[in-house]
Length: 396
Image 1: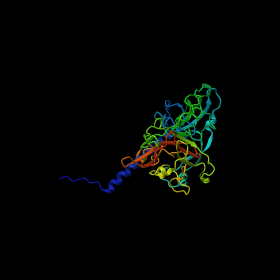
Image 2 (image 1 turned 180 degrees about the vertical axis):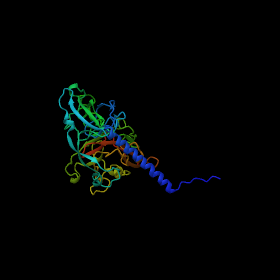
Image 3 (image 1 turned 60 degrees about the vertical axis):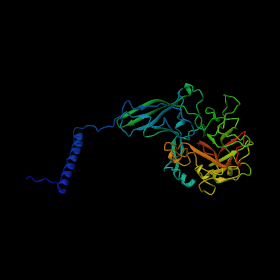
């Protein structure tokens, strides 16, 4: 009867040790041979086919944009790390265009924004100023145009871009395997769009938009949705804010200045956001009319005392906020679709709701829903203007 052969712990350790010694000897022998025969060190590989899959970029100034949506550099199996350097910024007629590489103090996140921060100080502690060129290339080849590039320091493109005014630049790529330059990438920046939606904003000139170029008939933004709101005098539902028969409702996103008598929070100036509703006489409707609205859930902002939510005044609700809004593409209770919208987070959302008793003793819940974005720091207000018919708040 044959005996079974068992490998005990001592034998296992001996085998592992001998294997390690053999491996070390092979490595040492390899290095020794390289030195013995004066062979060059192994170099990284830099493919001659490494290139950008997108070479023309049309970003909007005044907001941080990863140009081309990211992952636009095809390394063709080149070895990383690769050093990327923007070279030879120029206009089509040869003029220097290095203004777009000017270094600016830039707010950069150093910790993750979650949407659960309970104070403005807590938000601001998660980002700090760093010096970055306005146009920058990252270590993976992504190009970034920072929000610091705006119409004050970069001339926006016109509706027609002449060859002599086109911005060109090259990118030098380098690793230990060599160097090559990818040429003739183009940048055509559009004028700042400080907010969204922008139907009322001319995205070429940056001025108030009209139905025709040089015309005098203004265009407007309208609320995304109205539901269960009846006209005070028409008793018709105002489901379409563009319908003149049931009542027009305009949406304004605009900067404001304090009026005499306004309650002011000097410490928050430049960081305020107001929500306001106007009737057909342009008189403010009290926020208390929207009696089901959870004001603390509308904006990731804070009251004058620093607690979450907004201060409710007779004419508006005011928040102390950090810009841009939303602060990051993170689904939160303040963004469209809420925390369950895992692909969302790029649009903030307002929901103003109220209840009243309708005919038949039915409790009717009505409201306004609006998605929006604000990119530029300042004192802003979002205004819903019932232009021709007032909403009905009283019970039937």
